[in-house]
Picture (cartoon, rainbow, N blue to C red):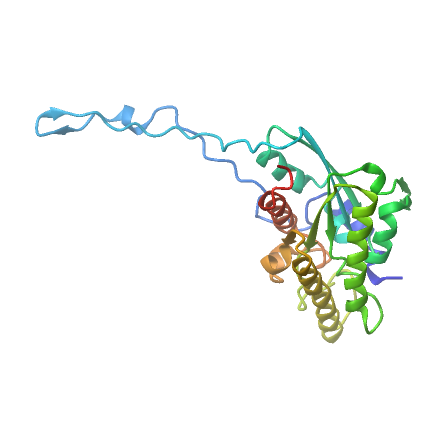
Length: 282
């Protein structure tokens, strides 16, 4: 059994979306409140050479423009391992950003993450129903999503020497299976946050420094290969891997593997930016 399967399924429940040690980086920072009286109303208008002039009024802040979409509602499915599972039901961090970017559009987000599973089992879940944590879940294709975000599955590599090559070919099969089973589907490849060898698995795994480094090197190879795959196939890429750079602020302080609140926010930002930059809703 994959080493993460012993605890990955419980991470999200334990966190309840909040990291064991609260992260000080909020997902959204509200704009400062507009003062009721402007500075121009408090002071007298300036006088220049005896001629009274009018002070230039302060501009009134306006809400960002609503981005129009082709439809009024969209379904987006996320396929992955525990790095998707621990984003939570309905992936609230991603949904919040989408609703702020496309305020006239409603979104249904489906979490098809399963802890401790590799990409080959992910491919099975595209066309076959399955049971996870006691819940019966229909096949991903049967939900007819408009967009599918395929995460790297890099934290669950194959236990074989040629695993990266096998993983590349599996990514290609996943894309082909999605296109064949969901006509017109848009696909985004997502590279999750980078691991940190100095703390990897602390609190969840009893590994020494060498074991940590070897595992992190392996994970990095899979995620970097995923990025190259997306680029080579001209598939939109949500790249949280390079943006995170192994910084511990993005990593859960309890198990030192999954997301902190800041990590979820970063992943959500990269996914929504990829959707917007590639005009997948327009």
